[in-house]
Amino acid sequence: MVRSGLARARAVVSSGDRGLTSQQQLLSARDAAFSALRNAYAPYSSFRVGAALVGAAGGIFAGCNVENSVFPAGLCAERSALASAIANGEREFSTLVVATEADEPTPPCGICRQVLVEFAPSLEIVSITAGGASAHWRLAELLAHPFTSATLSHS
Image (cartoon, rainbow, N blue to C red):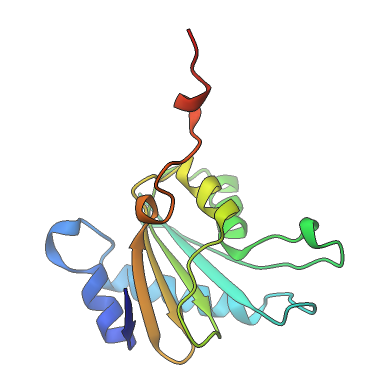
């Protein structure tokens, strides 16, 4: 669902029974995501992305996209943030904030969705543009039938 303005994104994330990240954590994650966006390396697509994961203990882990002339070798911001969190010992997450300069809020790509579901199947995702548009989803909405460790089970 696309909304205009950060105030609406705050309302979405801090709305009652969802048990989500606090408004202050959301604002800190938004700032971290936009800060990371400024450091993105995107000379080929010019599509800079910043991301910030909020860990269960309240830590915020940021990442940005890093492109490469060999396109599959690039790294998305969401996986960059996850790698930072994992390297710092965090394994549980409540919220992901994605920041872009696009006109419309951008959800994580399919590969990022699959990687994120390994750690946070019920992750709340908030995407915010530099222009103030925002959207939110649950990871389970974006990746309805993930490949998980349960998929590997056999008798």
